[in-house]
Image 1 (cartoon, rainbow over the protein chains, first blue to last red):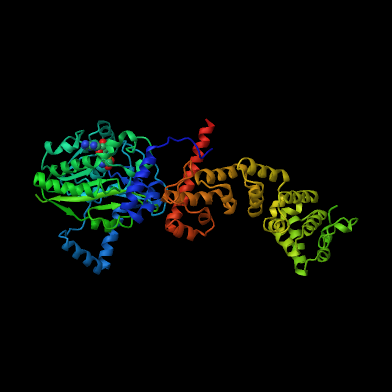
Image 2: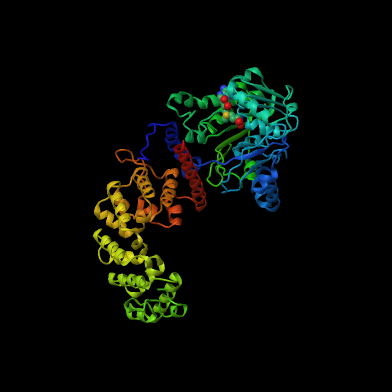
Amino acid sequence: EKWAATRPKHPPTRLALQHFDATYGTELGSLWPSIRIALLSEKKYGALINVFSSDVSLAELQVQGCRDFINDGVVQTSFEGGAKNESSDVSMAKAEADGLQESPLQHSPNLQCFVFQRGDIRRFKPARPDQFGLFGYYLMDAASVLPCLALDVKDGDTVLDLCAAPGGKSLALLQTQLIRFLCANDSSVSRTKRLKQVLQSYIPKQFLTEDTLRITSFDGTMWGEIEKNAFDRVLVDVPCTTDRHSLMEDDNNIFNKSRTGERRSLPQLQLELLLAGIIAACPGGEIVYSTCTLSLNQNQSVVEQAIHLAQEQHNIHLQVVSLRPLVQMFKNTFHFAPELHLGEMVIPHLAANFGPIYLCKLRRLT
Amino acid sequence: QTATPSAQHNQVISPDKPAAELSVSSLLDMGFTDSQARHFYDSVSNVRGRRDAKQVVSTLTALFVLGLNPSSVQLALDKCPELYTVKEAQLQQRIAHLRKLGLVEGSLQRMVVHYPKILTVPVKTVKNVVQFLRQKCLFTTQQITEILRESPAVVLEGQDQLEYKFQYVYFRMGIKQAEMVRCRLFRFSLKEVRNRHAFLERRGFYQTPDKKGQTTIINPKLDSILNVDQDTFVTGVAQASLEEYDVFQRLLAREWKEKDLEQSGIKAH
Ligand SMILES: C[S@@+](CC[C@H](N)C(=O)[O-])C[C@H]1O[C@@H](n2cnc3c(N)ncnc32)[C@H](O)[C@@H]1O
């Protein structure tokens, strides 16, 4: 009887699994079983260190065997680059051939994210507030830091986070302390409230003034009409099928029968958001599109169409910026999908159970 | 009637009952070889110290009567020294009960040598397990005999654990009794079964059949899940890496531990 326990016949988590089996089974082929089991098992977190907290228990984390994957990746890669000239020549040649020669990725040393080693399934303790009420770290999917790293903010940049709530990526961006002005937007009013709370629990008041931070609740698809050609960097972290959540939680699940329409229209919404983000960026500015789904329809296809429409409808020329250097840097921490024709994707794996995170970077040429 | 320390070396008996003597020479008489007799005598002395020699002799006799040869007897007693403490009448009763359950000559002896502990289990316990297998799990008499023969340890597994395992395999895996018996399911711990099944299921290689017994994929046979070594299972059947299986087993253990805690928490309220 224990096993025949009564469950609703078609819980959304089940529908999600059926849907993913059908689509990802084909799209991802032999990669799918390993991703599937990782999605259905406990995910790993990263602890994004709060530079503003006086109670950053770094030592404590290190004792537990955690490491900062960001700086580790940087050190590792520069070492490898020195040692293996040949292979770096090859990748340079390829980058040049693609017309995508990149200056090596730089990032703020303030950005630190601790993770447990590969295969280590221990969990982080919940963060504690210090004497000023600021928390020592923010627990998030470590792969969610990648879109922020890919955005590659420079000192004095103005940044738009178009879909910002609950605020993990905004928080990561602010940790760099490079941003002159951040606009954090999310159409959901309740989620924007949550975003405010998060920022207030991590960042001292003096950095949250009106001339450095604006929090808004607009429909992001309309942004292009509000503010064109304005931001050095735009993060477009769109709503998606949130694959992991959809498989694990029946509450608030987009595979609920009643939300079929909403789910089907996601790619269209994503496209409109990305286009709005592109328009909001200034010429020469950079845009990162990201999702937490494996879906081709919500990832590469959206980017492809956005590039096309930006040119057709707005006469904006875009260049796809290779994220290979980023992949190279962090391949010891994450599993990346091989050979995506557009963008990069962190795929979940039991030993490194982060993601899925898709990211693609564009640069406005005009 | 305790033996004096000096007497202990050779004989530990009541002098008025020479038949119950346990000495190296009496062991030789029973058919043990020289070295067996020595080994046996020493190990008995070590284990039992001030033992009841009569008891030891009756155990030995019972095993001989059952038809075990001296080296089998030694093997059984080395594996399960508790047998020395079992009263002869109980031994006879238990053996008779096993015969009644259909364990014919040959398989009965093999079972005792392989799993001597079976003779330390009260008839009542065995009866309960048999009744459970028959009434709750609907195994046939013949199947129950086979289960006992192939996996005698079921009698000591504990009813809760047994019920859980049966229900897991029956409902979650959709396996019928005959196949459970054929694949010697009861030789495997619940944990092993669950680890392997859950690993396959989450990878998308195993589905619980619906009411009509249908699945949209072809499930691997229970035999190929259980009766293969770990490497073959992981890389062959599940097409995964050993690293993944290693991590998965740890994750699953934690999941179940926390689920159990949660459930006992609910019960407590
Ligand atoms: C993937 S979440 C963003 C997560 C966030 N970037 C973080 O790192 O914490 C997507 C968000 O998009 C918001 N959203 C949905 N439709 C939107 C729209 N039309 N305009 C702006 N935001 C929207 C949702 O409320 C949701 O909070």
